[in-house]
Image (cartoon, rainbow, N blue to C red):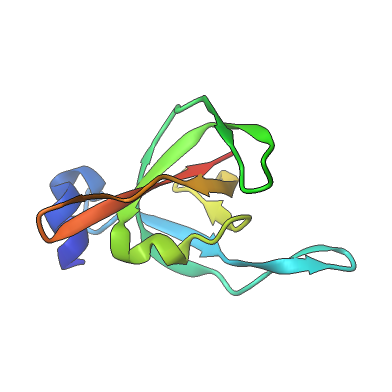
Length: 115
């Protein structure tokens, strides 16, 4: 949490002073009945909505990202492409891509684009 606080301060905290939780179900690959996902993990992140913009996904297709999630650089691997992310509102989104890391000082952040 120290790294999260260093980056985002009170912007990423709820009314109780805790990081805004995001539920991430990591994408494990395709199965016979569709995608397979790992158990849900709670990760802090700072969603910015609406963020409608066209991005090129990992498959090379153009897709529209409706939300950008700012997360500490150390947590970039916690949002694998194709994973399901449940936002605080209860909306479930899919990870489309990651930005190039933006670093400053000792810490940095990554922007995770979701549907």
